[in-house]
Amino acid sequence: MSDSRRSRPNAQSAAHASAPDDGADALLDADDARHLLVRTGFAPRESEVAPYVGLTREQAVARLIGGARGEALTPPPAWAAEVPPSRAQRSAWTAEERQQAQRQRGARYDELRAWWLREMLVTPSPLTERMTLFWHNHFTSGQDKVGEPQLMAAQNALLRRDALGSFASMLHAVAKDPAMLLYLDGASNRKGRPNENFAREVMELFTLGEGQYSQRDVAEAARAYTGWSLDPDTQAFVWRADLHDDGEKTVLGRSGAFDGDQVLDILLAQPQTARYVSARLWREFISATPDDAQLASVADRFRASGYEISAALRALFVAPAFWDERNRGVLVSSPVEFIVGTMRRFDVAYGDTLPFARRSAALGENLFYPPNVKGWPGGASWINSSTLLARKQFVEQLFRATEAGRPHASVAATKIAASMPQNVQNAPNAMRSDALQGGMRFDLDGWLSRFGLAADATPGLSAQLQMQHAVLPLAPVDAIAVGSRSGSYLQALLMDPVYQLK
Image 1: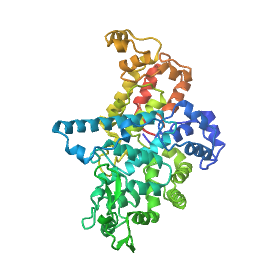
Image 2: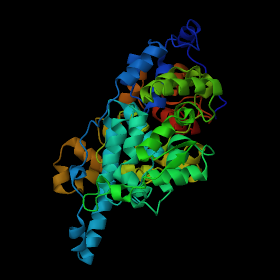
Image 3: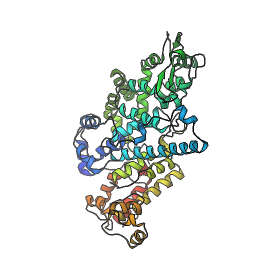
Image 4: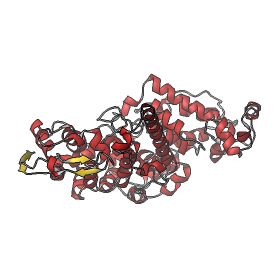
């Protein structure tokens, strides 16, 4: 799939021929703008593409990063601000109340997933949510060890707040985050009985990468993190000096009576940290194989900025490799990107977002529940015969939801509506459509009208190419039946394996 490159319409090709292909001053055409927005967010609506056309790469990246938010647009669930039950409350529970509390925690985790999916769908800053998702997979924590969903909601807010801010600040904050202290057993780390889990993962997964430290570094660093604990009633971070090992430690060749923050600063002082994090960003946004020279430039800017994430992203997004045609269509969309991108690209209306969160989980990406401490491996692992079939079924569901987007209703839909409860029958049309179509409403004719088409019309070659450019990063690999109507042609494009790529 990734070896097939499509041709551009002549006008766009001419625009590229007049601008340097490898410079920050190259001008963006519509394909370039979509590439930028797909890679750095979710598949964009057409109205989101237009403002980037004609900008230089430098200007486009400045616009993208300058519009990033530090907080969610939609308020989180009200319970996210609640203090977890205290020890006294928990000890007084009956067996039935314990079971009820467990069910409530599970329901709240589902509500949290649905809330985040909705935020991804409505946010004016998709880059913020993509980066929050990236850090969620970098600083991994999950429901399997973090019982209280309030703690995961707080960590999600932390990651969003610093998503494009200071990596150094975020590292220090995440290290003391209650969800992280539970997930990596930091709360049980104490003088005389050090727990090495966090000390190992902060080096291997968060900062340096594999092979960049010794077992002695891990053991010594674990002693430095002793004393970081949680209040057993509120689950808030507390410092317990009596549990801290204040003796001398040696970490990465430096010795002293270090505490945990000082060890984190030692890790940040290593040039390898900037390179490791930059390489992970490269694999997230450009390709699976970094270009050594360009990666070094990104890492140098990242470190020189004092670990400002926005500086690393600016360097990454103007790098020639980001725009190279050979790096387009080489990354696989994650389940969340696939679902949210499809919904945004086609302006699909919806009701409850929990079904989309569950669909993502079924496809392998269950938010707030990564498979292990290393997170989701991503890439080609997202796709197998089962998940590819499930993705195609989602597309089929989308096209079954097209009827609700049209001004008339089918006879079958009318019969179904007549059998609905009275309160649903009397509800506004949009709410009835939610019930009829599982929450999705896709105005197919409205989307096709930008190409001068209706669903039942037969598209000419020019319209076919325009649709391909609008939804695929490369030319389709599967043949599409000659004479297909516009609706069927679009559905065939979305069924093509290339639709899974970005």
